[in-house]
Length: 415
Image (cartoon, rainbow, N blue to C red; front, side, top):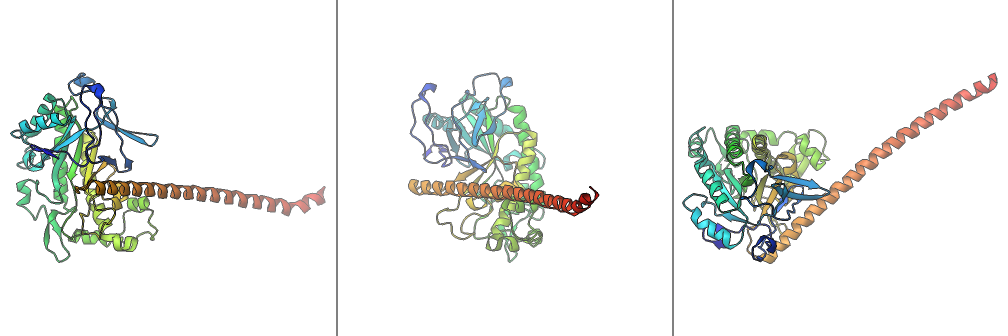
């Protein structure tokens, strides 16, 4: 659905605006919206409007988890996101006059807007917040909240919004390499200088939000956009990537996935045919997790990532979809690699509503299977601990009885 320069994202939460808030009921939007990495996120009820209450009294937006339920809290109350997303290249002050009528027409209470790294940091260490400030200021005037999208190292798999001064220095900020050594159009997740530059810029953005946005207009930030790699290449083959791929699987991932291969096993030994894809997912998630952690330390807003989903019904082999992102088959890899990321948002690109519902059901079913497997594993671990404890008690009892029996004749003779 497009209205002027705005689109209703398929990850927008389906919802109807309650009549009690003085707005007409809305038809539910297509799509199911935000998902926790650890389960589905359900956000309910509309919180205080951005124009009400004093800024100094407003708590920081946050996610709460209780009794298996999850909610986004804004101004201290649960908040349902009735959201729309500005087109990728439309988050500029000159285009915004076309945005607000569209937002009002669909009764959205939240707008997603990109922040372009190349605009924010036109020169190394020089930051321009004029566009960010304009977005937030106009959103306040139009009584809507904002979710910012950090278009940085990855935007749809490529470094499209990386600053020009970085694009012009590929030796310092390298791209991924194919197996034949050819550079491809995606940043390497092993480029240390790129990571450090992304962290510095994201921290600068979060620091500015903390200072400029005391009214909590911005309620959440997306870190990168559809990270990963398209074009048939499953993972990076740079020298650093090859060195790590031939090395042992990290302990955090072994523990999360309960890897049965012996300690020190390589990625191929541990994961077989899935090794390349799991390695790339870990590498991208590890990179983004560090960016997210640095930003959250400065200003702890809820942070999320989005992913271009593979088809969970007929996914095809790795390389036929974007690898590296948080697709349904590597969610646990992301959980282990990026604990600072709070939410994983699905992004279905199909226009077929029934197919999208089927994908959603398959996605939810996979989550239930994962949760059931984790529960069974936990039960088995608890049963093992109990068995070991009981075995130790039995052995101790046997030794006690044996000692008593051995000393019994001597005691009897003395008596």
